[in-house]
Image 1 (spheres, helix red, strand yellow):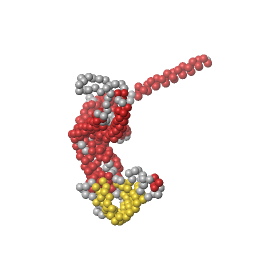
Image 2 (image 1 turned 135 degrees about the vertical axis):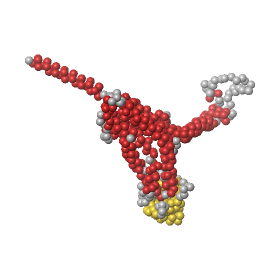
Image 3 (image 1 turned 180 degrees about the horizontal axis):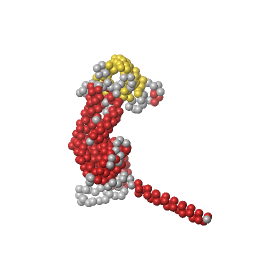
Image 4 (image 1 turned 135 degrees about the horizontal axis):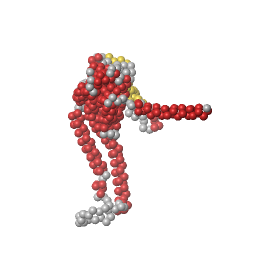
Length: 485
């Protein structure tokens, strides 16, 4: 227990430092007090548990059982009739309880913390909108690059020496520059719009004429203003793009909420598919244009009996040239319209599938973290008994290698599942499926006192080969000596 707690605290501190590094741009130079920074980190801490907990179980197991084997405590246990399974029994109960606790933590605490984390970042932007702007350098705020010489006021809302470069949507760089002597940031907690009021400044914009010959003259527009207002989205102020919101939203839901959401998403997706197919069929215009085409040798369907007939091989041959041209135009228009509709809807369908897969991955992750604790114990405990090394040397090397393998496979499986290359269940459980046989093998070898690798089976054939070679050389040398004598 002491080893596990120590390892957990050390690893948790390391991952906290990583979190600080990831969000350093939002924390450094934003005039945030110590209480806000601590609150920010507290809401970010629960997301670290799925990484720290399995690694702590793995490393603590290797260190503990490696120390037992190194000090010959397992030999004393076996001489007293205590097997490895019996020695692991109490720890197995503890790991089982830890796995159950980790599931409830992932199902209840992490979604709440994620919700608070996202809203806390938005609240900071509303209460202290100046946090996104750093003095003396350009700050990227949505579609603007803003630089101020000095910030003042209680929350830094009063700006002096404002320079704004507005990004061009055409990818041609900055075409608009706005400068003002002073500025003020205004917002309210009920609104998601940040208002930037500029005073006593000028406005410069490059113009792009429609005629190519006029572009060589480099026309521009310039004006002065006493008061100019710019509205900015607070979501962009906090640098929370749409892709990030989609990803974090999945982690805000527990198992029951994910089931309900998945049911709604699947029903909406099926409805969209059916609606899209119906729209494509209606766009063909077959029924609306059938009355304008007259088939040769038309039969009176009212008086004739219902007879199933096959379509003629030369279908167009049943029409005259005028009707053929009309049919071909209809077919060509339908094909172009259908292709355009498919091209316009394929990205929307892919986004819907990706959203469904992300929710399913979030659903299975609740169970994967619980199983990962059990899996890492049955890898670490037998491995420690086999390598017979405790402390912080070799066990850390094995633990890091195994955990990196687990994490890499887990990330790889999720990425494939997000793009619909694998079922989300297989993507989420891929790392567990691959490492479970390894855990079974290690447990079997440790129970039966078999080494990690049977080097004797590999070295013995090599030794026999060299012995045969040496014997042949000795026999040849002896025969040569006899012949010389």
